[in-house]
Image (cartoon, rainbow, N blue to C red; front, side, top):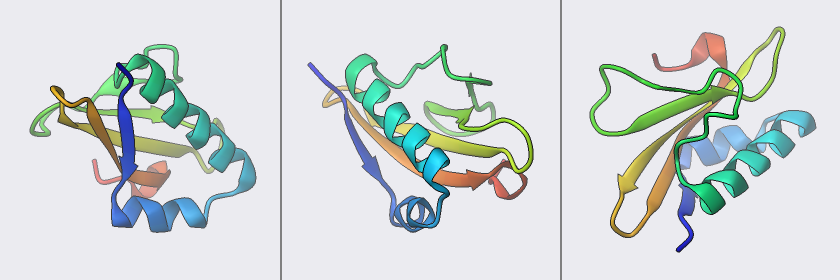
Length: 95
């Protein structure tokens, strides 16, 4: 069974303003999460965020400056729902 990926209102607005390259990488990340679940160790700098409630993960979408990151959380592991809660530069990330 595949996972469902949704975007929070904030992440959806952030996604609209991303450069094309970053937007493409985000689409690939969403596809990978749908196919294989929220744990994506092949993504650059993938990791579980400590100190956050529940299962929250992040990865880098680009290298260099500015570095773009994505943060997503497992909303419901039974119905396999993941919500992307932040997409943007590393400097403004909420961690």
